[in-house]
Image 1: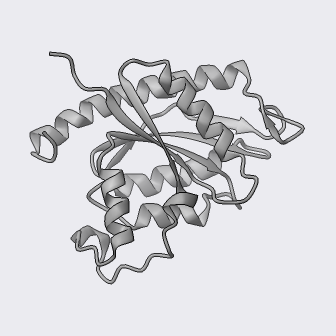
Image 2: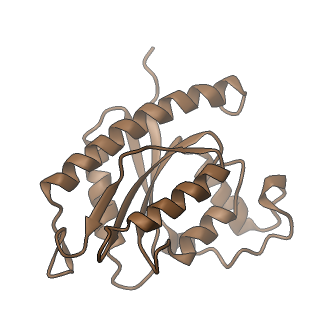
Image 3: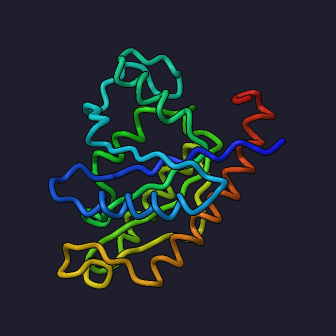
Length: 196
């Protein structure tokens, strides 16, 4: 019996008008569609539309008081892995992405993450470094290969997304590593009785 495809959420980490993350995330979806072992879903935090963190209990308790939190928890829970598409804002990630991560706890545990970032001078690398630390606290295993996109090299006139061959290669490497880790962590969750 063949194993079910891995469920990967591609999360748009920006809600800014005219954001670059939307075409980038759709490109990641296209790269993922070339794989037979992955089924990707696009998650737009602008559509999730969470308020600033408003749960009275810490997320580690799993006692969610609000319907928007329960809906977000169900969305995150159904995935084996995540690709975070994030710009770099002031050497870190957008507040909307940090807020969405902070709403939950157990739904993130023992899953895998990859990163596609973009920025003016470091390709969003500093945002990814912050994400690695944040996700480590949630027991998310992040893969080594990231996809740092340069606003001057991967975006024509700083607007139209035109990924370089290097970016394409890195995206495919990242997805390969992500699938490997997600497959292993699915087994861990099965052994713990978290999923069937």
